[in-house]
Image (cartoon, rainbow, N blue to C red; front, side, top):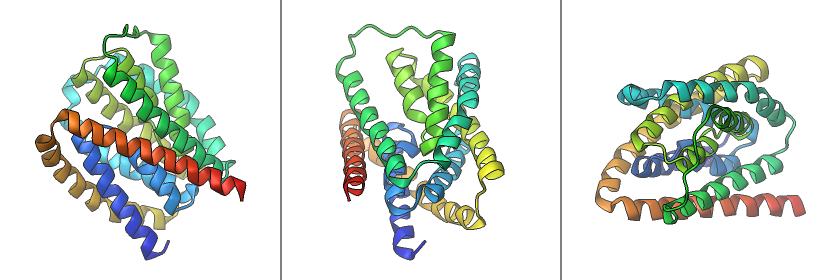
Length: 251
């Protein structure tokens, strides 16, 4: 990786952490599209997983008391069952396919968040064990393939109108578990060069700085403005990633 690409990853980490701090959206869903533009998937995805695991474990102690452990167990079980399928698909997919999938997930995530924000009066989805397992399974595949565990589970919990504190705490706990397992599995069965560990470590200070600034920015902007900014960035990132993948496919 050259210095220009590394600088792009550092800027992406800073902005993604800033937006996550203002809204609570997962770091990976904001960073993955740009990482895939700056590095090949077999390098970008493991780095994202290391950073996301670090962020989750740093935040988790502050939220532990609000975790719904029954929900966490079901989401985790579903994800662990499906994770190998995502890892297998990742090793047999090219950069264009992975980019298109990432762009589709991010764009769909932005549309779903927008719909939920302006249609709060619609009937809530009922949480149940089978749906918990299904949401976890989709997240497991997405984690193995593109390093994004958050969108399927967050959309599911939002549609169910889960309490915000419980939803956030359970999500962070879920991220810590699923990213740890993904990291171990990826290292054991696919392999992760020492260079990727060093790159991930070098990017963590930018994640920390973006998060610290984002907390202050979020307090000043207010919930509505911060959410609008995040949705705009998510939508633009998803559509741009799709456009890049389409352009590369048509060459």
